[in-house]
Each structure stands twice: as structure tokens, then as C-alpha cells.
Length: 348
Image 1 (tube, rainbow, N blue to C red):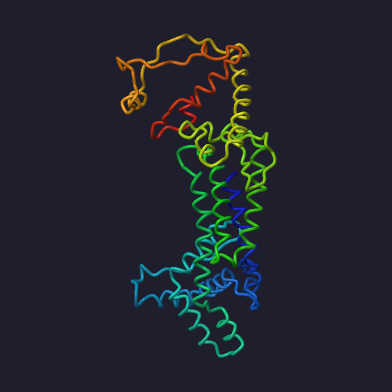
Image 2: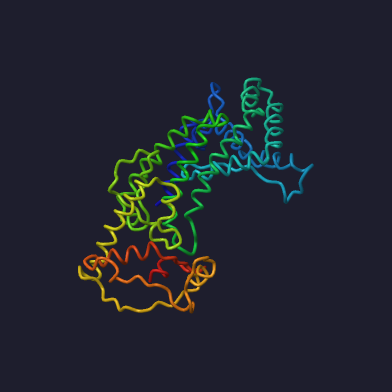
């Protein structure tokens, strides 16, 4: 499951950056960050735990917003959980949106303490302007994972064909962010995430679900060496076919992809029709709407009546390879999936 992969990758990034543990009611102080480093996730989490630790503190935090917001508009801080990376994203996002009140709350909490040691511990949790800037930058990194996940999630139609390009985009975006100065503090964490992406990318090659829906993720930047592995999710999407690879991969990789796709197509074709292939009547094809539109836009169109277009039939190719003609015809044709129609329905 690609959503699970995104979760594991992002959890690896979070854990590599922040050594702070998640809140455990059985050990209520175990989650608090070490004073030796400025762990922004740990700092925010510690403040959130304190704000939510009692009904009195919850109300105190909400009351801080009273001067600016109505009671219905006032918001409470949210705590993250171990099993969902997005809970950390949501926790940080909410804290950043309420940072004015977060700062006031922790200051007031420290002032109310009569024990100097406890007061000092609370003061140490106060986020500086630089800390809040780091929160913003880390949220920007988590937004990449969120957008990646949304790219292949849908309620009403399969989106498996978007999975590999989504992971490829996540890897590329993470690599680019790693080069930027403002993300320097997260460099090691990004390296951990990139390694995780690469390891799971290779595992996708073992799945035949991906094998006949897209193509291998053997981008040179990932140093993938399994050249014979194929993932044809994208190839089976009539709206993309080979265009993703033509746009993003070099010619040699494109050729490797097409060779592998042909082998898989051949196996499936022969399973259905045998080595002799399916019988095909020779027919004149009517111009489709898209063909007619393209003809109208073409300067060198020489069709006289506009009703017929040249048809490539099996007779035009190698009769010993009927599957190859079918394969090339699919790749070369212009197909449109009607809005609302799923890919299985289109192929069916």
C-alpha cells in the first residue's frame, strides 16, 4: 500500500530529526525534549501536552484567544500520535496558527510557578522567533508528503497508476529541498527519508500490480540496477501511456521501458489469443471526433471527404507478431477517458 509507504517514509524523517518520544500517560515527562538541543517538534509537543493536561489549562488557553475571537472561533491545540505521520503535521500546523497564544500560554504558566526549577523548565520550552521559523520550514517538508499522498488517493476511482510518479516526485522534491540552506538542519532527516523511498521503490518491482500498470522506478538518481523490472501502471493509463517517461527519463531508459512493456504485452496477448493472434477484419475506420479536430488543425491535411482516415492494419506489420501491431497501435493512438469513467471500465 503506497499510503503506508508514505507513512513509513515520513515517520522516518520525523524520527530522524526529533528524538523526543510521543506522549505516554504512564510516563508523563518522558516525552519532554532534552535541553541540549532545540528539537522544535519536541518543544511544540511538550507545550501541547501541558495545555491539554487539565480542564483548567484547556480553558486558560481558550481564554487567551477571547480578545481576538469569539468562543466558537477559539481553537485548542492538538496532540500527535505515534502511528500517523499526519498527526504531527496537524499538530505543528495548529500550533503555528496559534503561535501568538502558545507563547502567551507558556509564559503565563512559567510565571504562575512558585518553584524556580519548575518555572525555569517551562521557560526553556518557549519557542523563539528562529524556532517558529524552523517549525514553518519543517511544515513545508511535511507538505510535500501530504501532496504526494493526495496524488494517488481517491474515493471513487483507482489511482494506482499515479503511485510511482508520486513517489518519484517525493524523491525529487526531497532531494531539491536538501540542497537549500533553510533546510540545512533537516539534512540528515531528509537523507533518512530518501533512503527509505529508494528501498521501497525497489520493492514495487516485485509486485505484478505495478508491473502491468507503470514501469520501474529506475531513475539514475536512485541508482536502481534492476533494469529488467517493469512497472506499467502509467503505460496502461490511456491519458499518459509513455508520455511520463518521454518527458522525465532519458532515451535509453525509455527504450528499456518499452522493451519490457512489449514483453509483458506479448505474454498477455498470447494468453488470450494464442500465438496466431486474434482474427481482424480489414475495415475502413471512421474519423473520430479527435481525429477530425486534428485534421482541421493540420496545415497539410489532404483528406477530401473528411470521413475516412488511413488505417494501419495487421497486414501492414509483421504477421508473425500480431501482438506487436496491437501494442504499437495502442501507444500511437490518441485515447480519451471520459470524465467520471474509471480505467478498468475504459479497458473493459
